[in-house]
Length: 228
Image 1 (cartoon, rainbow, N blue to C red):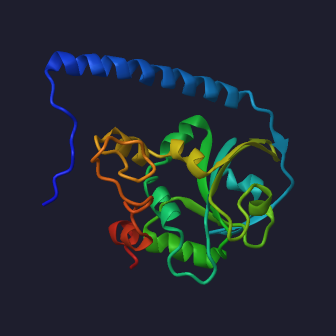
Image 2 (spheres, rainbow, N blue to C red):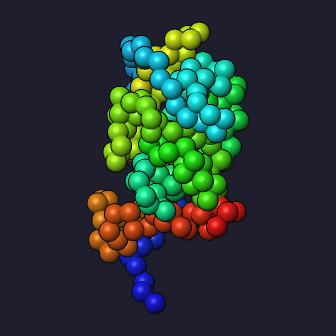
């Protein structure tokens, strides 16, 4: 059994002083995130053309993807043609969103959009136990136009609807999507954190190659998917 390094043991008063010092930075970060969110709410927006996506019920205009709501978050799931198991990061990341009804109170909806053909996309959704509504942009330029082209990376876009007119209000990709996740936030609370090589950790802390702790698509399906 390998014993990793661990934090030094101190008395309660010393521990509290260290916590108080850290809390100053944590509160400052919270205020900065509030300021970023305030700036995001003041972002301009761009009018979107009409698009037709494919959904579980057939063709759907972009305005229909809102499901009658005025705000929409779209997670663009990476897709590789001909592969049985799609991006493990996207598969694992989206598996955590099993309860989205709270968005109803905010007049909003959260969906997945992928470049995969709709039949294949829906089959994959069932295989891995995903509960979101999925749409395909395989026959539309929508994904490409909003930063998620075929064989491209994952992304998040946010839209606002005014009647039948849709506007794009925000976009992110890469680590910008982490703010949507509770999993990273929980892992980052742990003494050893994500245990990935890029992290700034004390000497002797367990560290492994980036992504090595992430669940594979097969593992996600085994945990959540009843259609294995």
